[in-house]
Image 1: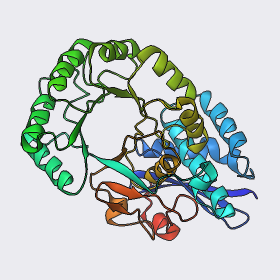
Image 2: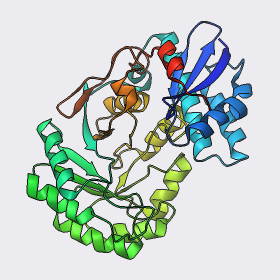
Image 3: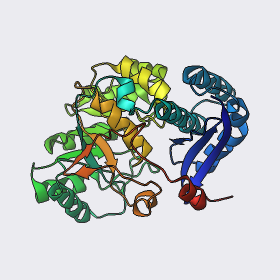
Length: 358
């Protein structure tokens, strides 16, 4: 089998999807991280396309290493590696379709049919009372965990920060009926993170995520050592080596890999193997391929007890579907798909019609 065509579709002007055609008529669909979609498209169609043409998609490891090597000449992280994620997931899609099996069968033995998810609220413009009402709504929908983003990472230690007031409002509304997760995306200095963290301890929050900038690993270690509540980090780690560095220098309690940031399934498998039985809570902000792949990985792993992130914001790919089927979400859980590949059947014609041009 050979790859005959490579295209990156920026659907609705936001979401980059990779489409790979083969000489056997099998089409692979992959997903890249949604930030900088036009940079992702340019990388795929100018840097990587010529490398991919005529390659055998069965050689996914060899292809991944070649793409990574080429990307490293201009910095492998950020958009270039997330572009590789889209390519790699499309290559895996081709292979799984050829074998006519779901991803979980390729990874191991499925031991879980349903995966718990948590409601991840991405809005920063809500009042504490509005956020509390939103948490109540999702609690009544069956969710046991709720994550909020009430800080302002573009303003370190911002006086506009609503984190503590929002946590307090949710506790008043729901008491301890729901677990509160606080993600500030590196919005604090080390001292401020510890100060806020000590208040969060009083509210018994479930986790405190990325309290300081992702590059400040020594600061992260100081925060982790100073607080009793679990500290989470890892969404900006892209390779096994990044996680080794994070654990050695930052030592957070909870680790957060994300398949569409790590260059796809090929590197994600290695990361999950390296992390072993450490505390893992997978980072996941996109509702289709990203979510589906993570479900398959979680379905074969009994040691991971923490829920999967699920972005609760409106998304045009869900409201106006590009797929012929959807993931089955009910009462804060998702059914692990048993259909071949990732379990999502995309309509390529709709995707191409929705793809924006620069």
